[in-house]
Length: 367
Ligand SMILES: *Cc1c(COP(=O)(O)O)cnc(C)c1O
Image (cartoon, rainbow, N blue to C red; front, side, top):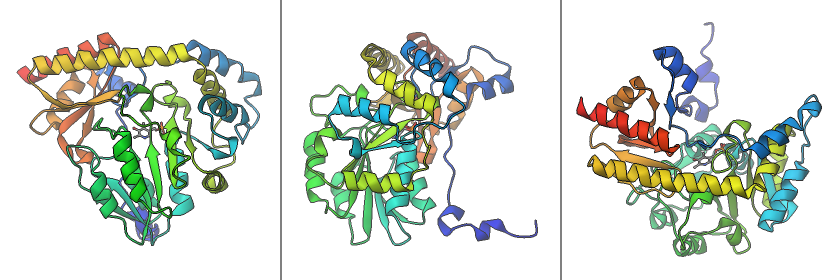
């Protein structure tokens, strides 16, 4: 090469480690010549697309040659109806990851500091570093966010704080009391992103609803997604809710057609499909109990989780166990990149998939 392009890249990008996705089923099939592969690696919805979604997508086919509605009016109106927010509080994203990136691009510079917790979602460091801002990582407490440590880390340079509730990959959660006490301490000049990607699964009386906090905290941005409980991971659609001025700024940096028409239609349809959501939550509740029981029977420790995944503590480096599970056609997620080298994160699947994981685990731990 005539030139070192690494040296030409922006300083933050030079040090960036790309996001490592779960291994795709097709890839493992090709590598091992296996069929019947079980993927419990990316917190996807095991129910498949809802029929209401398939119909909504089909209805868009004829207009597929046209640009989508860049304002996403129909979906935004559905969100307004469902959550009682105003249209101008909404930012639609190509997945909620897109919204996280829009926030970083709109508000961060090389002088900014961004606070997030150890073991928090891997996209926070990526969007922070990509714009050259400084990541301030506070140590976790019992695997969860230590909000006192996060509040103490605020300096004059702090522009943004990321909080995942519940957090991925630990499944830990913050109560409304904890969260409000924290938000009360954060200056209005510091934006707080409350990432609620798994909120639909949580059934805890003390669990906060970010949407209800918006009126009390002008610096709050709530992000949610259609990728998990609504089962649209491949379609890429999520949203941010915030005060209208913040939403306006996010929409200024947004690509004009960042959400495609199939995703827009699918999301609007599934938002009204309360039956699908109820089934998602129920299958998850039963699957979580099944896995917890299975782990206990094997004498394995885990971090109690309110999401659609659970992190299993193997008490030793998990890499070889991950590999052995792969060889048996079960894909789970190593989380060494989250400073959790002894854990594997396992997404909750259908009953048969959960059982396949437990069976494979018994075999692997025996050998
Ligand atoms: C899965 C996940 C998201 C959602 O990602 P999408 O881009 O909407 O698919 C956001 N935050 C966390 C913590 C997640 O685990």
